[in-house]
Image (cartoon, rainbow, N blue to C red; front, side):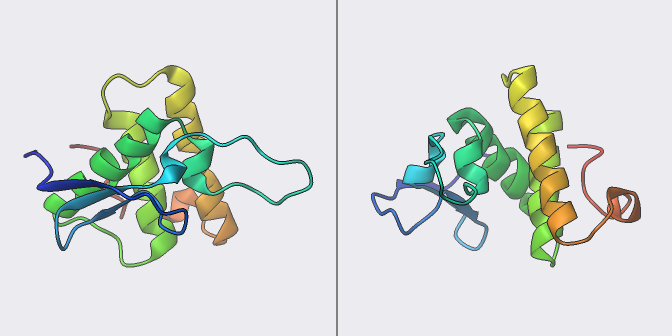
Length: 129
């Protein structure tokens, strides 16, 4: 795949790291770095559970490459699960722990949406580049 047209660091705690296919833009927010969970506070966002490398891989290998292939999902849980699975399978230079965390992220997203991977694995773009 070609290089991303734009990469922008967003110095705003309200904006998350995300890929925007309409502008071929990667926004990098403060959530790109792993967070330390505060005692007594709820769960962390997906990106703060991941390392910065796996977060960027989720956005570029997961979302961007699927968008360039015309294989994005219209339902958000499917799109996010697909992105994490693609990053775990195809991103270069990730450790086995980073890949495992991405796969767990995808399963958690599907579980929370009451979707079983067996029901959707054939519609997700997860088997090839």
